[in-house]
Image 1 (spheres, rainbow over the protein chains, first blue to last red):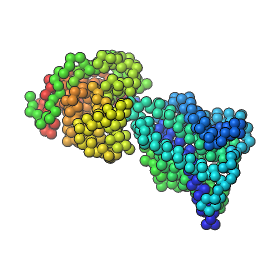
Image 2 (cartoon, chains in turn blue, brown):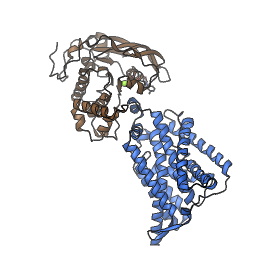
Image 3 (cartoon, rainbow over the protein chains, first blue to last red):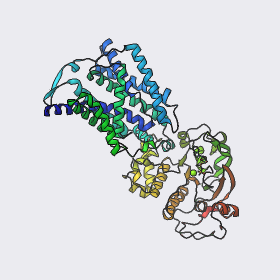
Image 4 (tube, rainbow over the protein chains, first blue to last red):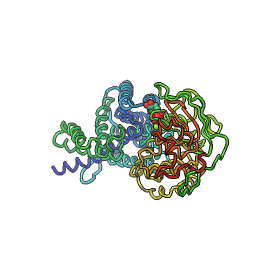
Length: 293
Length: 275
Ligand SMILES: Nc1ncnc2c1ncn2[C@@H]1O[C@H](COP(=O)(O)OP(=O)(O)O)[C@@H](O)[C@H]1O
Ligand SMILES: [Mg+2]
């Protein structure tokens, strides 16, 4: 029993790190643009399929393939921004963005069904199959590699945000758009690039998800987006640290509960969300909903 | 002439230049609904402080937003030192030497004071120049240098104004738009903020000031413009507008003619060059 708990916690932290990366992309987009990108879930699946195509057809290693899929997802993100999000203006943009990005999700899902069929597939590589003994029990290598990569990318994102001129312009735009325009920041460009970065991380999330989830199909995006939304709301919309902490917390909680009942695991996930929001409506790390005015 | 307090920086350079810094003709502008500005024409003399007064909702902030490129005018021309601003982005207008300090507090609250000041020079690509400018600005506003490590959001309203002033000077602008810098400040803090505006002016910056506190604003200014319902109602020297009977009754709380001396607690009275 104690051993199971211990395993569930390790598992939760490792998988939670990867969810954290995907959630950071989502919360960053919200922080800068006041947009909730419902398509984030299906974009993760698109990222997984890109890795799948590269690995099955071109025999490119999953991690090496990220060198192609991450830039590809960045470009797709920027394109989605220009076509669907940029036209949204004014007070209703947050709620309108739910509709617009839902439309994007449906379109991508349709295309994926058409190309890949509804059959479940899984990503494969030696590190998905073979396991390593860590902390006293066996885990496929992919959990460790995926976690390490997610952590490294979150650190890179942090460095970009807090150490670069571009990062400063992103943080300024998150706090006050008009003031940012008045000091010469091109907020449209910041928004497009931020959306691109927020989507680019789904390439990594998708690859790890595709290798660890035991199979995915174009319908898997819904399960993902509901978790990701719960995570960023719990972490406080727009808060990067919050998204990371909430991801690890929620996924660990889920894996703990599933020791007793896998069916209850997902219920507890949302129960925890409702509970925390009752006590702290702005989420664990939120700033009293400043972003929603 | 009223005796003035220790006016360290001295008054603005009197009649520094003859060409106006800014000329606006036939400006019409709005937010998509009805027009807010109707056929506004005015000019802002170089080297002096010009104050726009008028009731709430007259369109003063809209006027400044149109000048700085936040809003696109429907009709009319705006020329800065003879060059048209038509079709220019806020960024390009900054490049031309015009900065705008908004009415609402506009510091990036979660960043430090120093980061805020440096962001004033965001468009400067030359890091050495940025540091030089920061040194110059912090010399001009030593308090701002003292708060460098604090979060901007933790400062009081008056302190935030000074940081906003410091930030806007990072580009060494020739024309500064100030939208109601006194809003929400106590009379004592207001004086500090107005002193800072005067100091900027003494450093050669032309200032276009919008003030709800019309009396104090006009006293500080060489020139005044009364804006009413999106139209220019009256222009003249600061003093002429202060002493105009009708305007006095409408915006200055009446009885201006008798109260033309500096009110107790008022900073420096009319600056030297006000007439
Ligand atoms: N962002 C905006 N959108 C729509 N209308 C606005 C906006 N800002 C101001 N207005 C309207 O424009 C008019 C002038 O406002 P403003 O320029 O702020 O006046 P002032 O600064 O003189 O108080 C008002 O009727 C106001 O309701
Ligand atoms: Mg105003």
